[in-house]
Amino acid sequence: MPGLSTTSETHAPNMPVSRVLHLWAPLAASWALMAVELPMLTAVVARLPDATVHLAAYGSIVFPVSLVVEGPIIMLLAASTALCTHERAYRQVHRFMMVASAVLTALHMAIAFTPLYEVVAVSIMGAPEEILEPGRLGLQIMTPWTWSIAYRRFHQGVMIRHEHSREVSLGTLVRLIANAGALLVGYTLGLPGIVVGATAIATGVVTEAVYIGWRVRPVLRERVFPAPPKGDPLTVSSFLQFYVPLALTPVITLMIQPIGAAAMNRMPVALDSLAAWPAVHGLVFISRSVGMAYNEVVVTLVGKPGSLAALKRFQTWLMVGTMSALGLLAATPLAELWFGSFSSLPPQIVALCTVAIALAIPMPGYAVLQSWYQGALVKTRTTRPITEAVLLYFALSSGLLLLGIRWQGPPGIHWALSSFVIAGICQTTWLWWRSRSAFQRLTGTDYADA
Image 1 (cartoon, rainbow, N blue to C red):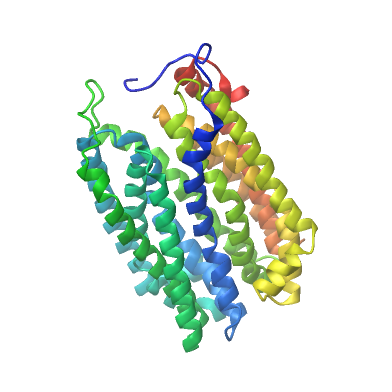
Image 2: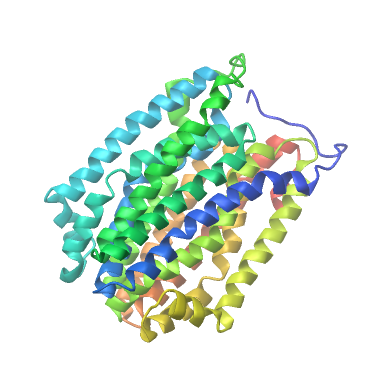
């Protein structure tokens, strides 16, 4: 395929690990700062009236539904990193981003403002009656979410490709500051928890999109895009062939969020499990986010001479470090400090959270591996195996959740997390198997096995 490196690693000088670290660190900081949002929201909303109801509404309706709607544009970051190699490609992907954003925002509004909400929240998700109206209001406030994220992720990919990753992390810091400011104002005014939380999240993503739009302008003015390479045209057909399987990946993955919430609604300790979910999900997301940031690093560096040894060494450190951090939290009084003192959750919910974190320890480890395998597949524009893997994840986790509903055994949050971990390990194994040919094409070696 045109544009792909097939350089052998045999005689290439090793790339320094510091180069991998230099590219990864700002991206990881961006992911980590973004991951702080949910624990910060939990800590504020937990101190407002009817905290359990509002946390459950956000965690089981507003957040998962918003994520599913935005799913098709999440992979714009990887797509723009891989494809925006010249100005014509930039404009084609930009056009797709704007059209997709408009369609998905219309879908979000249809769910939030029409009777379609009852179909989604009641008929499909089985949400308890007490969280229905707070959930509706939260979704309405979150209307700018999808378009802001699409615009931001597309332009972040352009900056990452040209190694302007520092601006990406600064944008996330701006988002977090805006988020914290909105939380502070809402808390001071004593607004309902769902209003405070949803307004803060929406304010943050809009602010970050504006900032990134401003910071990408110098990159575009510098005309860093070369002329289109001969024999490698990016047509509408070739773009859709590349992107549709890629876009299906987060859509299918994120559908598990409302499915998991619906399953927890039907399992033991339902309301407490739903109230615990934002705090647990936020903390696990922090630990996984640094591995997710590795994906764009792999897309950028894999296949370059001497890169494989550095990438593999860095990847091992990342896996060990993230899993150890989560394990330390689960096994020490830090869990009580985080969920009890910082998040201000009731004792029975703190107990649920502590066990849930222990069950989630493998998640950050296989998140790193998934970025490794997916990065090679995206680099070679072989995206179908990524969809295959996530379909396997969806089928296994859905089946296990159904089994948990029928069994009525452990608390819902514990069974749901166990289901996600088992399915995630199987997903990672499939990616390993299907990425071997991609590594062969990039480097002349089956380095996925190393």
